[in-house]
Structure formats: structure tokens, C-alpha cells
Length: 253
Image (tube, rainbow, N blue to C red; front, top):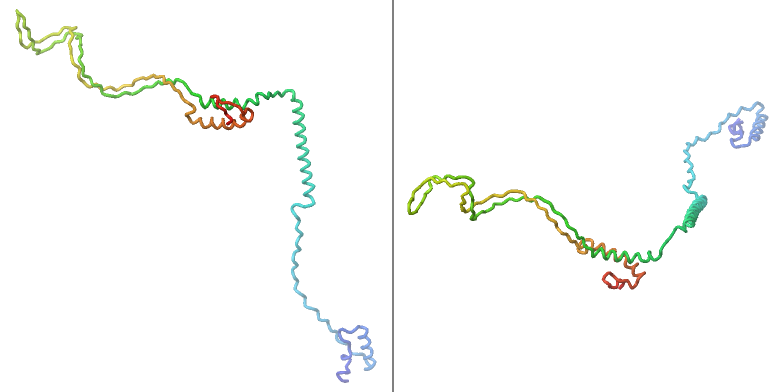
């Protein structure tokens, strides 16, 4: 039996139908007269396992921090609450005003005269004077040299003995011109000349009443008073266009 007529050559291929394969085996058996050789079992080659690929994590759908479908309802809710609160407060205020309306007394004349009174008072304050008397009590130290050169008369308070005096006595009975010891009795007046320098160092008490007259218009308060007067002037001129100053000059020029 040749290689082409062997039962193995007549076996069905891998991709043939199983029923066709059985038929081929049976026909080969009848032709050879014996049991056909058991065909070798061919194992189908299994494909090599593919390496597992890591699946990328599914990106979670981003959820917005503020959902658009909830903004408008929340906004209208807050707006409604604010509106209701404001309405309640206004209602309470109106009710309180209506209850106290009888107690409110407002004199229009006093209100319209207020700018004029302020203007004139600021003008008078700018021309005001601070007049007072300030007492001054102090101890003034004094230190100087006093020069003395004058004629004076002193009186002896007791007897004074003068030794080695030169005595001259010229009378019709006695004529003495010689040195002698002389005693000057108490109560004798002697003319003398004082010529000396006397140092003086002491404290002199001083009490002085100092009159003070301060013109505010000549101090740093002049600019604030002028500024206040100019701030009130528009309202004063709006209510009294013919207003006059303290000097009788027109204010609203």
C-alpha cells in the first residue's frame, strides 16, 4: 500500500465536518478489510494567552458643586424670606409711628431758624475775647553784689574808748595839743561814710495778678470757626436769601 493510499492520507483534515470524517473512516475500513488504524488525535493548537491589560479606571462623571437646577429655587426662597422680613420690619415701624404720632411735636419755625442761629454764633465765637486775670505766686532767687558809697550818721549805743587819739583843746584857759586816750559816751552821734560791696543772695516772694486778653480770631481757632460758618451758609441763604451778618453786611452775596 502506497503512501497516497494509506488510511492516514484519507483522514479528514482538521477543519472538515465530523460526519464526513466518520464516513471516510468507515469507507477505508471496507477497502482494507480490517480495522482501520486509529488515527492519531491531533490536538488543536491553543492560542498563546494574551497578556492581561490593565483596565483604565473609569472616569467618574464630574458632579458640579452647584447644580443649576437648584440655584433658582434656592435664590427665590432666600429672596422671599428677605422680602418678608423687610415687610415685617416696615410694618412694625409704621405701626409704632402711628401709635406715637400724637406725641411728635415739631415746630417748623425753630427748624428753619437753626442755620441762621448757627451762622451767627460761629461768627460771634470768631470775634470773641478771652479776658481773665491770672494770679502768679512764685519765689524768685536773687544773687548779686550791692555797692554802697554814701554818707550817714550813726549813734553809739555804749561808751567807746579810743586809744591813741590826738586831742586838740584850744581855750583861753587850756591849750592842749597832744595824743590821749578818749572815751566817747553812749548816745554820741558820729557822721561816717559807707563805702563797701555787700553780696546779696536770697529768694524774693512775688505775687502778681496778670490780666489776660486773648482774641480768638487771632488764634488757631479762626480757621475752624470760618469753616463752620461757610458750611452752614448755603442752608442759611436757602432759607433766608436776605440774611445779614452781625455787622449788618449781606451774607448771601
